[in-house]
Length: 451
Ligand code: GDP
Image 1: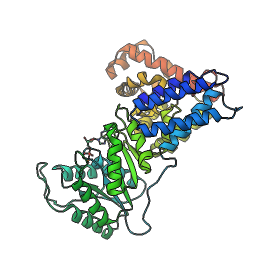
Image 2: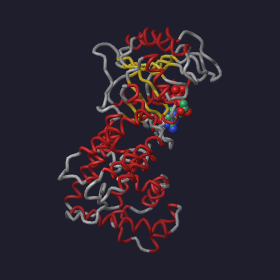
Image 3: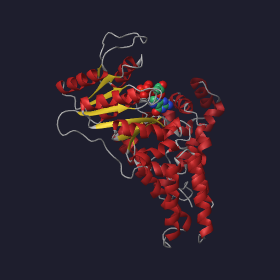
Image 4: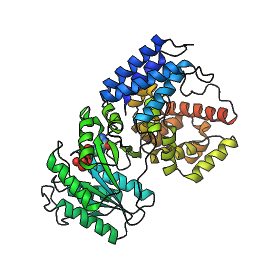
């Protein structure tokens, strides 16, 4: 997510490290680098111009701070300006006071609307809402079937025009405006508290598409019109966003495919150019690859200050409180960390999803991005297989695991003895680290962002 932009910006700031005082030339050079990094990331020219002007003005006028060195001060300014172009405050869904909250999705074909419908409804459901989906995309042959699939996956009912459409080659006929209207009526009758209406997109912006979207909007009077935009489409993002803004006057933006490696900067311009907030981010093809968009957290991810809050939220959603309390107690009592604990922690991590994604949110992740990219999720499978091949006694008393036991464990888990040895070594280190932490001796721990 915004990897190269993040790398470029952090590299720029590194040059400022250790400088006692910044001259005007230092600031000019830094701002020039920031400008290049943003332009190379496809951020719209108008946004870059305004952004760098603000940064420069504020950097020149910055008071000498006792708490921050000049380099840190620039990072702080850039961070605040990034938050600002990303829309400032977190914007939550405008829920209807009475009746269902109606959310309409709009955007080009392939932007990720249908996928988003599944993700958003899954997310809402987890928060106790009772969403329903409406298939108003009658343009793309497979769209209705696809919505049913994502609805199934999310465990959410789907209102579709032709229950009989089973072949992906069937194009449902009918009037999308009527389908939207009927779908909302059905949601109301069945007391769903949120209804998400998927609409058709085209490969490019066209007048007919926009008129249809407008007709649907006027027929159902939505609380939110979410414009879904593929973060990988580059500079076109701004034109597309402008066209949809004029066409349907959307209320919020969803950035999709942020997991891609593309430059993504154009998506960063959308909030600034349209004046509409980014509300959600889509980060993969799975129903859980989705998050509420927080401008401040995204800025801090881009500047490699980590996004520990999002990490905590993800953890909270899956966290097993009893298990966490058990671990905390062990920790305080300075009891030995065993392979049983190790296994339990691995289960927790698995529930949180991809290890790589989680690590990427840690402060300083950009500096070890290459290693993280190479992280093999299967490694966790291998480690788990090894631990599962140990007897219960071995797991709580790893000291007894001698050479012949290691050979047996390797055989049982289908790995080499040297892999077992490596794990034993890492485990011993982790045990030591836990002891150190518990006794309050944090020296030697990896630090956060150092400037
Ligand atoms: P729609 O035409 O706007 O409804 O777009 P779809 O929801 O059908 O998505 C188009 C393609 O993009 C599909 O293959 C999706 O699986 C894929 N897709 C959607 N969202 C994401 C995302 O956040 N990340 C990735 N990698 N792929 C996505």
